[in-house]
Length: 173
Image (tube, rainbow, N blue to C red; front, side):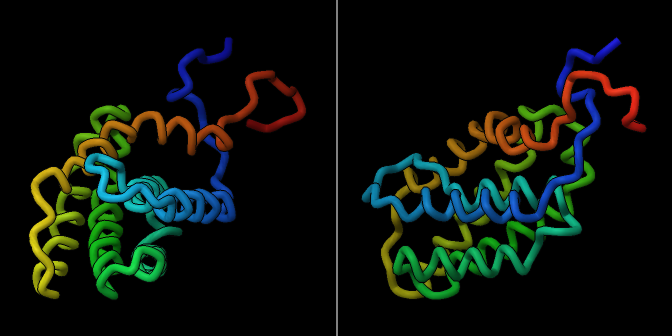
């Protein structure tokens, strides 16, 4: 009898190229010029947090720093603003990885929301120290929209890891 619930299936190992491809796709989404539209998710932070939770031994501070620098350069932000925030986000997500994975996706989103808010607060603090003005409270809406996207993004990014439904007697698992 085959399990019908996708969450009860055993996942295949993730391919590292897929992890970095998803991070570069998120980076490309961030480079789309949208102006100052409040509430748009921080795609790189969201995907980075997802992979730091799912693969804490493979994705961490180095990826956070590298993609943070790419964000700083691509968006013309204060150098190190995103890098600092993403390194802290990666560290906190790696630290909470074992706890977060016990919960269903919607509860995982509730665990990740404070991490995303803290990363945004760090970016605002760096901007304020550099002499910029406060962007307004609507700036923090992107953390909430990112948390709302956690469950669909989890489903989408885990799709390549699901085992096939058909049973093969020659396969050991």
